Length: 487
Image (cartoon, rainbow, N blue to C red; front, side, top):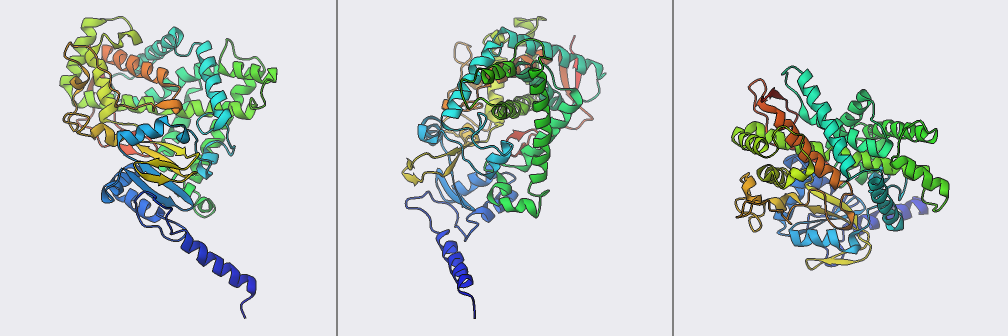
C-alpha cells in the first residue's frame, strides 16, 4: 500500500505541474508553457537555431505578432518588450527600476544580495549610485584629468602598435586592456598587472558568450551546477569570481595600508566606512561596487571600437574621409573630446557604428515592483522584463534605409552633427550607465588617435566577417589587422 505522505507528494507534484502551465490573466502572448520548465526548452531550441537569445526572442515576437512577448522560464515570469514606445516606458517608469533577485544575480554579485550598484535596489541603489557618481567626479572622472589619462593610454597603445613592426594585431584585446587601465586609475589609483589583466579579460569574454541577459540555463535550473558545472557555465563564473575578488581585495588592502599614492574612489569609500555614517558602507559593498565598475568597463567600449575599426578596414573610402577630416581639422595634435563637434563626419561615423553594430542588443533585466500594463497587457509584480534595443535601430519608420551603413544620416542640412534620440548605447533613465562619459570620450579619442597615425589594412588577405557574436553583449568575431604609419 502506498504511504499517505508519498501519495500526497505525488498529488501535490501533479497539481503544481498543472498550475505552472496556467498563464496569468491578460498576460502577453508567447510560446506554450510546459509543466515545471515553462518555455525554457522552446527558448533554448530557438536560441541554438538563431544563434543568440535576442534573435530567438525577436523571432518569437514575430511568430506571435506581438511587441510584448510573455514567457515563463522555470519559475520565473519573463517579458521581453519591443518597439521604442514600450522600451522607453520600461526605461523611464519607476515601477521598472528594480533588478531581479535571482540565482544568476546572486552569483554575479559573489553570493551577496542587494549589494553594489548594478544589481542593488531601493535605497542602497540610490545612495551608492549617487555616492559613486559624486566621488568619481571628485577624483577627476569626467573631467580634464580623465581626458588626460585617456590620452596617456592612447600614447601607450600607439607605442605597442609601433613595436609590433607591422605584424597583424588584435586591436579589440588591446583596447579592452586600455579602457580598464583608465577606469582602474580612478577606482584604485593604479593599473592592474598586464598578464593578470589579459587573463581576467579573457575570462570575461568567455562569460559574455556563455550567458545571456536572462541568465541562461544556470538561472533557470540552478541545480544543474551540481550535474554539469562546466556546460552550465558555473565553473567559469566561479573561477572568474575568485580571481576578480582577489584583485579587488588586494587593492582594498593596499589602500588600508596607505600603499597607494594620491586620491581615488577606494580611499573615498574607506573614509566613509571609517566615519560610520551609514551601515550600508561596508567592505563587502565596496568590493561589489568595484566589481560593477570592472564589469561595466571591461567590454562595451572595446567592442564598439572593434566594430568601428572593422568597418573602416572593410570600407577604405570611409577611412579616407576620416583621414582627410582629421588632417584638416586637428592635424598632428592629440585629439580631445571637444573635437567631437568639429570632426563632424568622424563623429557621425561613430554614431552610425552604435546604430548599425549594437553592442547591447537586449537591455535589462528589470524586476516589476507592482502590477503594470504594457501595450494593453498586464505584467504581474515580480516579473522580469527585458528590452529589445537592436531592432529599434533597424526600424524603417525611424530610419531611412536602415540596412545601409550611412554616417551622413547624423549630419544635418547645414553640415552640423545631429545627435539622435533613438540610440541607447548606454541605456536611459535612472538606470543609465554612470560610466557613459568615460565610454564616449574613450571611444572618440582612441578611434581618432589611432587613425591619425595609422592606416588599417586586411591581414593575410582575409576580410573579417561582420556577423557578430551575441551573448550578454554583441562583439565582433576575433580578427586581426595590419597597422601601417600614414606619415
